[in-house]
Image (tube, rainbow over all chains, first blue to last red; front, side):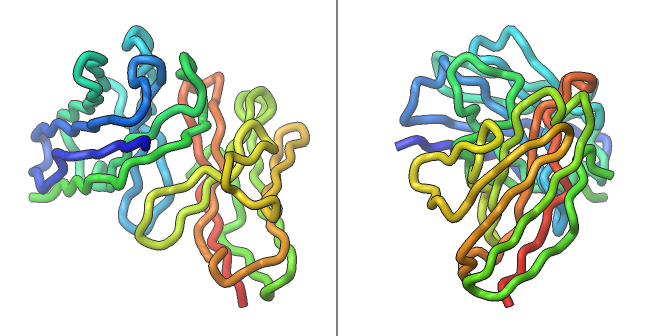
Length: 123
Length: 110
């Protein structure tokens, strides 16, 4: 069965960096675009970034552009989110989410989600 | 401020029908498919509707989706207490080159 397992969350001071990981299994990872979506405490969903199936195309929300980098290693079935210059407003649960269709990247159809990892940015 | 606009809350009695609206613009809903998600308390979102009106396997036909112009609607019939959740619409915005969600709608089944 499809599984997405995030890790790497924790408490970090403003201005510091953190890297999140998403380990995938149960599907052909190299055929699907994968997204990061976050949810601040008590707030709604915010799309963060997506990488295409081959890693060649990446898109970011304006709120993280220039600070966050999405990447993947298809040989390890793993997705990452490198977060730098963290701000208090980046505090959220971060989910990785798989695109429904193979080879699509610019989509909002996410059929599988991980359980999320909490990032708290605080001094 | 979300790119897509949803009502903050809706409510209805068990067995009744409810609709949740999602309003956008020509750069998002007007030019791409809409998806809908259900998020039960403390859990990850779950895909309810994709491509405006399609249901993934396992989603009951009590849930339906439609789109007209720059707006979309989620319909839920035969409401159950287990449907109490937050519901989000989402799509791709061509101007932003980014995914976008609505602010979410909290459904209360009275």
